[in-house]
Length: 312
Image 1 (spheres, one colour):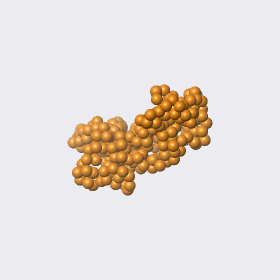
Image 2: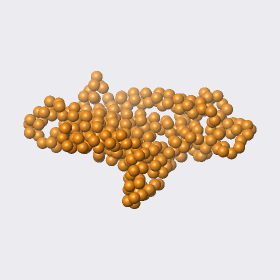
Image 3: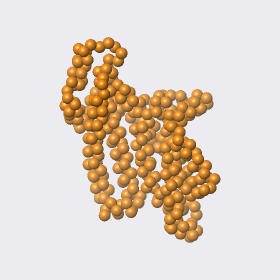
Image 4: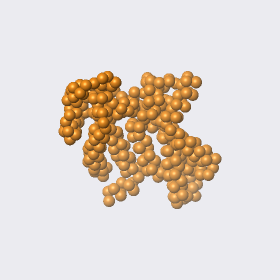
């Protein structure tokens, strides 16, 4: 019941957030000089009559509020319109590219969790020792390196020089391995730092000292006490990483020529394809909201204190 009430409240707030996001996005796309008709014509010569015909066809002559209202009344029914440049339904274009970005994002998230949480716990529970210093140094290096630089390095070494992986394109899991690693390395470094900080905080608690005094081994202390009690900040970071993988993998997709949502968004913004940009921005907002909602629900499941505080 408590979780259900939380979900209802968050979904109600999400509706307001998405509405404001759609208005801001629509306004920003309408402000610059040279609308979508210029992108449609490209370098071809144009006349005022041709520009007027294009604007009339796509309702670009209407006032801003009328344009937005026309889009909004269709969007609430699931119709996000037709791409101005590709002349295909927006949802069809997103549906074609979403599986690629979702596969890359999920693969990268799995690698991030498998690397970040164990390494962060190992560093936190061995504070000041060689393991801690090594993990901290490596995490700082990868956290400072841009994703596109890591992508280019991995591409050159493992795809070009060693020929272990495909250079570009989509296909089986091998095509996603290098992009996922490039995306996961920096994120894993952030997760390592967060997990280490949480483990250090938990390691100084009285119940950990008491558990050690009782003679419990390292594995029970990790599993029963450290991992679960340090889960809340780690869950927050993991949720943001999961959302970021679906909405922010632009540079990695560009480097490896993956036709995902990131490259589609760059193309749509460059061409001022308002219906497509609007739908992609709202999709990003929905992903972020759902990620935060899932993190809040996970809080209540993992830590009874959060559940009791919410009920109170």
